[in-house]
Image 1 (spheres, rainbow, N blue to C red):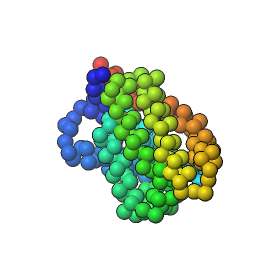
Image 2 (cartoon, rainbow, N blue to C red):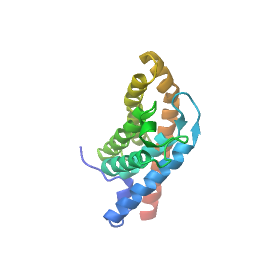
Image 3 (cartoon, helix red, strand yellow):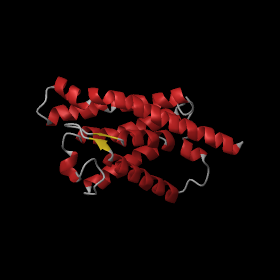
Length: 191
């Protein structure tokens, strides 16, 4: 497969280190804000983080998306209040949501990778590029939840995956719509 350009590179401009750093900081800011918009559920809250991660992956590409999520986790590990609720620091990261936090990096990277490998344009392709990594996020999330919480595997699936699947579908669709619209706008601008 050929390597396609992510949306952010197609916008033009110089691809400098300063620009990349600013994009990473902007991405981590969006992630922190999206983490605070949540529906309280136990033991894992539903937030808009996965929508933001999909958007970052769909627009940044694999490497920059992965670096952005690593920077986000580093900010949280240092105690900055970037995660859902009021939690921060390594103890929070070792709690019930730890597997999802770690999985965020893989989700962002894989979304960007799929875009670079041809799932970069059109609603259906972008939806697949967003939805498949969102589903795979449940693997480390549920495994970690099962390991740290007093739950059976079945109960961990019921608490950490099944209630979130409909949201994953909606968030992947919203991300695909946004990026499809951005591509259409870019094409119209370039004439």
